[in-house]
Length: 282
Image (cartoon, rainbow, N blue to C red; front, side, top):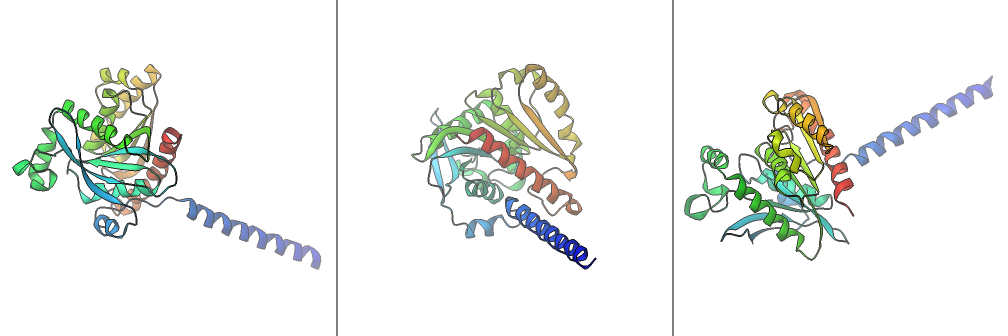
């Protein structure tokens, strides 16, 4: 009886120890999130990675300013184009680029308002109200040309591979999806809470697309079913995740909606990295 009790107790200790190991392993495996909007600038200041402002030639006598962050890895890295929101190229977007670099990607975040502002300036030359109007007025053909040129600049870096993905948020999410319809050289497209393109344009997509959406974002979510139906009909890859209770812009506003935005961010970011590694790592 005593031996049986000791055996049971020993098994319980082993089980508890195993559970503790599993919990620790899960905690270790959970990827670090990009900062939310409030912490972005301080995280950038603390980052050990090299980030710099650059200018690249986008053709048609057009020069674009961009923020580039380099990963710390021994081999060549795939490229991620980070497409900003309707607020333009903010510290938060630069923080996302830095986090992607921490995960092993060369991240380039172009300011798609370059040359559009006061005295030829970009995002930082606009008022908050003016920047949103300026974004809405951008020519889609010009935007796609600038994004292709960003890919060309980054893949020409000595430490880059030829693999390119795009990720965008809000307006940038829609733009990432549309970019996939405009450039067959794209290897992966990520859409964070951005509307889908017109269904007639989807036949041109070659890249797999992953869309990540808040469940409480009816305006955007209404565009998912027709795009999904058409992508499935065409035999193209369009994976979607809709996170219950999360709102629009959940990755930027992780403290919102009583924890639902944070849970969505954790799940979406893990899914993002798994998708990118599957599609971009050679």
